[in-house]
Image 1 (spheres, one colour):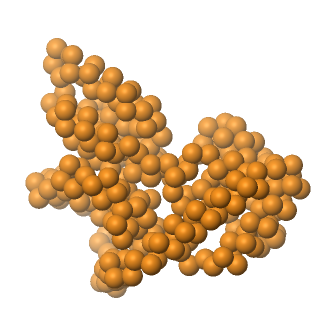
Image 2 (cartoon, one colour):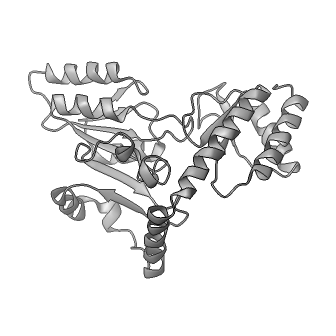
Image 3 (tube, rainbow, N blue to C red):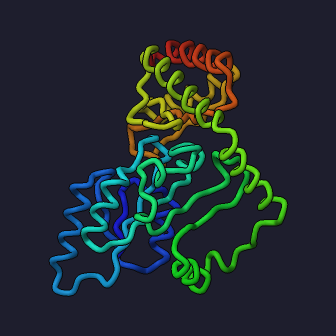
Length: 271
């Protein structure tokens, strides 16, 4: 049995389908609903042989964070495993960007931790971290992995270098969060709705898909690039512009972006 957050990334959904395991869904970030599902499984005449709870660490469309500490506690109580996809938390959360497991001090309590080098680290590739038994199992059973090409040496070296930068230059993560706090605060002051974001992924809510597309086109004409996220990528009437902060941006860069957002926001009567 795999229990999945209802707003997990499409790649997780497809991966779960490939397992052929039985599936259950719990409401987004709703630990009480997760507990309900676990209790229902425990009460079956023949409970599942294994239970895996899977969640994104940082949700890519809204920028909110999974309550992984509470999920891990429930999993331990019910004898379930925990799998976290930390693609958007690596290089962002935790000490020196070590991710959501470090953020919640859950070392040794999360069974599988997946990450990517193609986002915060600026390279390409990924990692799946767990016990030696899990790694050996994956080596023998994961056809989608076994039948893919390995990273060339230069890519592996670049990934290692990216990790070393984070370990030795903590100022990048600090600057990322400084920029994030400033940008979010200023967007809200202008009257924009940034949803429930807790991370550098900051949606600017538009509601209507056509309006989001027009907003993206207009800010691009003014020199700012940010894509619209519309149905079916998000629910109807939940269209937004997805902005993702960067530690390399200066206050001048952010000021320019904010002035363009203000201009187009007023032009399209969003603010």
